[in-house]
Amino acid sequence: MSMSSPEQTFEKIASEVQGEVAKEDHFQPLSLTELFLMDFPESKWVIESLIPYQGITIISGAPASFKTWLLLQMAIDIATGKSLLGQFQCEKYKVLIIDEENHLRLVKERLNLLGADKNLPIYLLSQKGFLTSKQNLIDQVLKICAEKDIDVIFIDSLVRVNNAEENDASAMSGVFRSIKQFCQKGKTIVITHHERKEGAYKSSAQSRLRGSSDISASVDAHISVMRDKDDKSKIVVEQAKLRSDKEIDSFEVTLKKNNGRMEFTYLGLHSEDVTKKEAAKNMILLVLDDEKDGLPRNEICKRVKESAGIGGKSTRDAIDELIQEESLLEKQGSKNTKICYLPKFHETEIALPETLF
Image (cartoon, rainbow, N blue to C red; front, side, top):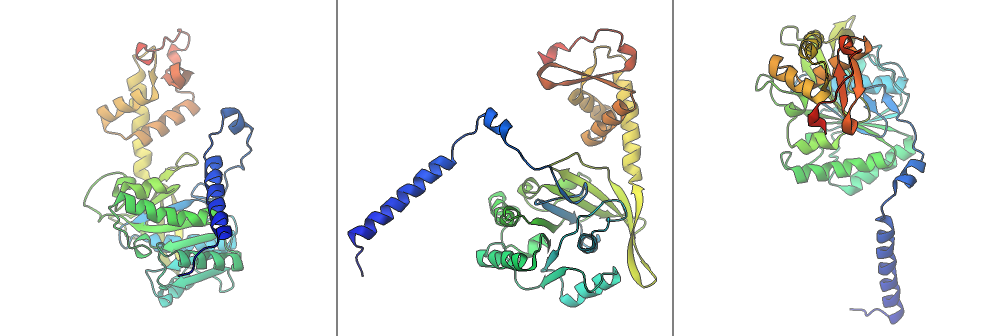
């Protein structure tokens, strides 16, 4: 066994000390003055209102819910720079699809059916054994992205690219730390994941997501797709989470074969959501009818939930629409609380509820 020379020992100690000093310098807090002087680029989209740039988006759905078809349509529209469904503008980027679910033959068949041009800048890794736990494989994918100038990576599916226990919060947090390495290198990630079987529960899209809640907490956006029970060609697309902006309303699309091709067609807002929002609007006006002092938003949501069983998102959206329509007014309350009240009380001085102080 060779012994280190005094010079080598000194260099090693000096390097370790410098490393510790660097860590200490890195772990210094910013003042608000320093923070407010910093310039950050504006939020960017890969697909407007749906896929944030350099973020992680998860597309979830039950088996056979068309989530992989939607992923492939997104890849095509990003590679062409066209709008998704004729509604959501796509920025043009080169795309890599890592498909650990399907054989290349099936991927080719689906891309053909969706009308993909063979010259599109879409690259494929199919059933190559990619795992997020293998740093060398992450490095290889990053190398491919650098060589091909790829900015967007689609992964199908989460369960196929990791060996972690999906109900273990710590394990799934580690999986997403690995995935975030792509974002740190400027890449955008879109990854599919499974939901629990339809009919097993009635709940929000985030709670339908299979596995630990750390999965939902780790992503920047979450899109859920669910097939209509009566019309199997129709799917409801719900934006369950969007970290950088307000979630858009759920909408409906169909996927049907037409002249030998599979085509997505945008139908409009989900009718059930529209009905819920209208019901929420009526209930909000009823709740505030005798409240001349107004109520905070969270209290309105609570009362609407208790009275009509309508969830917070529908009620918050309904409040925003009522304010835009000037059917509802809003006043700044204590501690950044917003107080909502009806226009008929506008001439009366609005007293803030004592519970806010």
